[in-house]
Length: 113
Length: 114
Image (cartoon, rainbow over all chains, first blue to last red; front, side):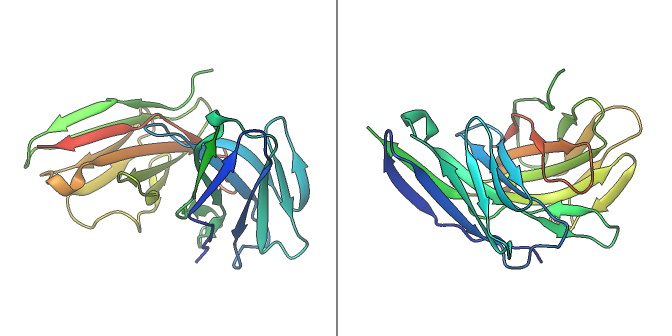
């Protein structure tokens, strides 16, 4: 059963870089690692996805070591509007060859002025 | 290209009534996932459906809850004889493949049971 472990909460100040690490020891060989952002009363929003090494887009970077048992989401120069809950997600393989996706507790990031 | 559409946005029911929550996936998406979220908690997986098939419903209560995703029309999450403990936000997500976690979420339905 795929399971992710993240810190429950983090505080940061505006302008700082924030790194959130997620452990996923049982990740399947072919599975991706995906991160989401959720604001109150809204559905989660896709941030970034990767399989190995490093991925960067306009909002974040994702670092994945060779063993793929963890991943780190990096948010450069956070602002107050980045205050949200961040989830990493890996798939739970099913016999059909598909996956179901079970979210962990997420990391509640609070950005302070 | 419209995103995932859920309706209603808010639903109020009295104990014992039925609740029907609708989810229209993104165009071209044939995989739908339903999640429940209580205040200040994470998203709890309920059920995964493809067109006309339930792939995994291990997260759904055995009684009163059912889900469908017909060939035509939206996916429906149905809760019969609602109780106060069913009050929560229900989110659906869709994807275009079965092996990629790039899920697109709707805005959710907030169910309140009086």
